[in-house]
Length: 394
Image (cartoon, rainbow, N blue to C red; front, side):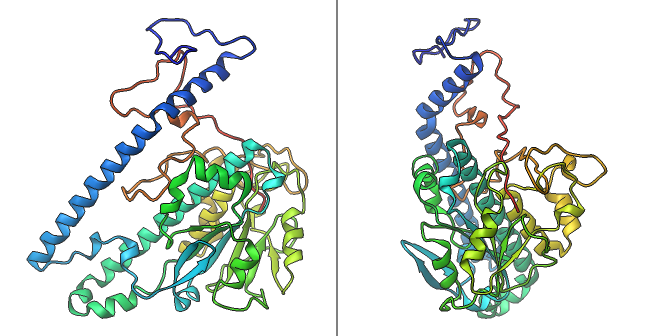
């Protein structure tokens, strides 16, 4: 593609405008191309979803006619009939007070927009969509295991099955305080967040305090069951407990703002606890010990699966970050700092169209081939993604 937006001929030399590097020019051209094909890409995904839904419904009807089990084909949001709506502004959360006592709560507190630059806001939005995808996968895995265990019983006691499915997956995820540039980013670039399954995550402009005060329909007079994660305290969190809520500071700052999450937590008061993850036992870094927001969410979910921090860290974190005697690079202050090498990786898509399909498509991930279209820009390596060196303090 040439500077005027026309497709370049094979072998034609790429000449960037004056004052722009060739690499920056290639990125600009990729963004322009994707801006032009974005709607076509979305329509393509939408049609695939409709096709899969039609096939699934046809299979359900076929199994019903034969009197065979079909529950494994139902979507998670249709399986739990015991719920009520908790309203956060214009967002509704499907929730059951009984369920909330059997699983942990995770809140990503995004009240740090003013502390980040534009690139960091983009990075945080990508991490949030990845966190949603991670929890959606965990929810699906939970229901699959429950249905496998209860299939025989469901044929005999359908009502009993519905009641038992009220035992919720391990975590409920809320992204609070999404406003300013982050909200603008989601509205303009990632608008499908509005279609997210509320059983997997809810993204809202409502601030953290209001979310906590309405978490279980309580008055919010006491936060003794709330833990704010921060790297700037000595006391570690040893285990996650059902019925407790764990807050992750939604900020990408390369360690510039030390004690920020700690100060926020202290300002909340009401017996809130401040803890750090036990990452010093599994990661060796020379700077601040930090993880991305997406990694922290995934770690909490994996701990719920294994009840073992070592297994959780080994499965979630890149091997180079693990405590195997090799020192990683750090550039922060205090406990150590790491990098997020895969925050833009493709997320699993099950055809539900739940809003993460457009995740940060303006990176190198943009090279999507829809109808035989190929990127003919010289020297582009579609396998090498531009990895943003972004970090989350925990």
